[in-house]
Length: 115
Length: 112
Image 1 (cartoon, rainbow over the protein chains, first blue to last red):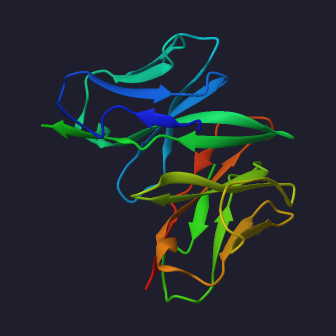
Image 2 (image 1 turned 90 degrees about the vertical axis):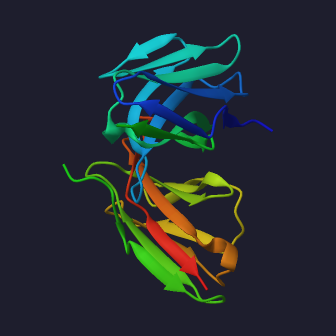
């Protein structure tokens, strides 16, 4: 079936380095993707989104890249800080009709920042 | 503007009991979605409510139900609880015709 998956379950990076978190999706009809950050004991927090008609979108210290040819997206975090330690999820937002959208999440990547 | 709030934050129940969880969306958001998060299955969509009507439903048994009130607040109910229902239940809200969903802190349910 269609799914959104992650390549790596864990990622450790040195403070100040850049982090790259990858995600593969299988539904070629998907047109909207979101990255969420979930800290321990909290709900997912919106980071950045991208539409399928874009290849790249930048936010504050974060960049999302979308490669539709290989159905892959990545989240890049510049100058990773201890506060970036969390689980990161990519999600595919699929239109379900009648104005309804449904998020399908990947399993998540745990990012650990080494001080 | 206040974020999505969920009550209670923690809950312990025993098998066979039922439970009701509450969610208050961000002011002005009329769409409310519910998700279940477990270590094994990850985040899974339960259902979505808009204007007091269930607009979309995930692949969960009928023991899982919900409703939405005229002020957009939503409740979900799980009847005849099973051990496997232990999970973090997350509520998210979004504006009409806007795709970005904003999540609450969740209710952690433990079924013994």
